[in-house]
Length: 306
Image (cartoon, rainbow, N blue to C red; front, side):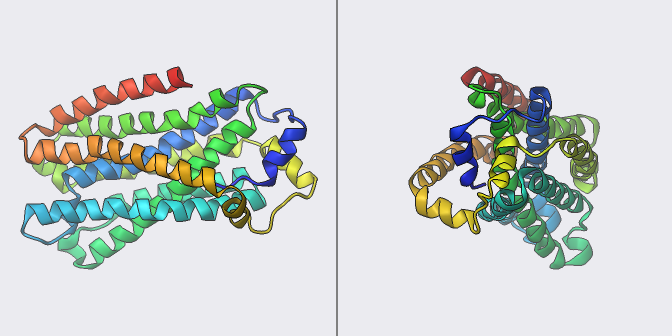
């Protein structure tokens, strides 16, 4: 999400936050955790079951590769989501766009859980899956940048870094919730039950989680930095254009840094899960348990680093 005139107004005076610090921290953390839960639910399903359900190839390797291609579609959509929601976030406000991104992600995730497989509707199944996965990427692209702005623009003086930590805590908790739920299903269902209908449960539960996130976010007021910029009529016609022309260097460096981060993280979680279960012979529940144990330390390191 781009930030243009908002920071200009803040440099001259620090507005008093209209939202309480606890409410800001909760809203930025819960929304991001829910969105990343949705994202990681698909990641785990892609490693375990998406291939056989939605792709007709007889080769298990081809099915796995097809599942990972659909997983990668969201990464193509995320920059577009960031630009789209960032534009409207700078034009109409942070709160509205964050609500919209949360709804988009939640609806897309729930629909994936209800989507019939290839055996039922043929080629429509992978086509609709790709479309919904693209929508997931748009939603998450708008969410993370918006949540960071929500937290930092509401932060008390000299605490912007600490409040900016709460959205970054969301991925760890979302990952733990998603994999923890899949671990519970692996321990309670047979392999046939899991592949037939059990894997859909985490997707459908997203609808309830989104309602919680919306309840929290709708209670927020607009961030004081944005409200002050609007009062001074500092709205920019095309925020993305200004960001690209005036701030392209830090934007490029930040994007490249995140490429490294995502490559390491998703190889260590998504690909390793598929490889560990299908090639190395680990049970589903054992490998999911190892991932849940590991991500606890990621969650602990986030506030420590902040």
